Image 1: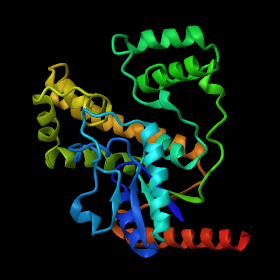
Image 2 (image 1 turned 45 degrees about the vertical axis):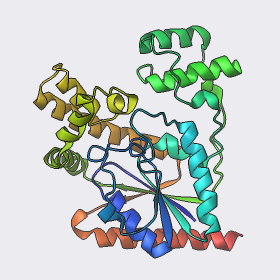
Image 3 (image 1 turned 180 degrees about the vertical axis):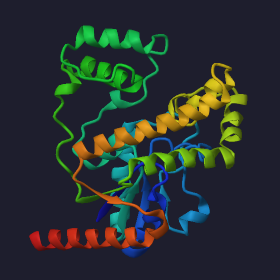
Image 4 (image 1 turned 120 degrees about the horizontal axis):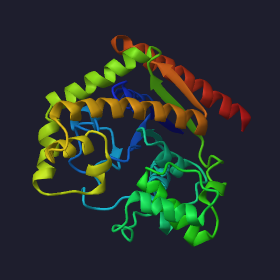
Length: 302
C-alpha cells in the first residue's frame, strides 16, 4: 500500500506520516523537491532526527546544494524504493508538497534525459528561452516565468518535434495509492498559521541557515528558487529590506498553498481532511478510518 500525504506547511504532515508509519508498518519517502538537499532544513520544514522516531526515511539529504537533482532522478529513485520497500513486506508513505514530483513517480509519466537540469541555456534569460519556445511550439501552454518548465518544454519539443502540452502521459496511475490532503477549512486561520510558521522558522535560525550559504558565495538553483531562501538572498544582496523579505516569504508560502490545492485537486483522487492542531488525534483517527475503508474496498474488488 502506498499512502501520499500532502498539504501546505504547518498543518501536520510530518506528524501524520510518523503516526501512520507506526500503524501501517511503513517507511517514509520524501515528496518535497527542496528537502532532498543537505542543509536546507529550517526553510523547508524538514523532519528532524528526533521527529523520525527511528522510522526509515528516504530521499532526504541526498544531494549537496551545488549538485543537480531533477524530476527525472526523483522518478527513478522513488520507483526503485517502492520495489525495495515492497520486497521487505512494508507499506510506503510519501509525504511532501511537490505535486509534479509525486505524479512523475506514481503515474505513467514519461520522462527522458531532457528532464534533467540542463545548463546549456545559462547565458539566456527566462524571457529569451520563452520566446524561443513559442517560436517553435505554437501549442504550448506554460507559465512563462517558470524557467525549469520552459527549459523542459523547449527540450521536449527539440527531442520529439511536438508540444509537451500534447503529451498524454501521466494520466494512468501505475501504483495503488491513497492520496491524503491536510488543510484547514478556515482559510484565514490557515494563512495565519503559515505566517506564524515563517516567524517560527526565523526564530529557529532561518536567517543563519541561509546566510551560511550566501557567505560561501553559493548561488545554485535550490537557493535561488526555493521559498524562504530566494527572498533572503535578495535581502543579503541589499535589493530589499529584511521586513520585505519576511513579508515575501509569507506571501509566497500562501500563494504556493493555493497552487498546491489546485494541482492536487485536478491531478489526483485526493481526500482532504480539515485539521484542528489542538485535537490532532481526531485527524489521525479520521484518516486511518478512510485508509482502512479504501483498502477494504480495494481488496473486495480483486
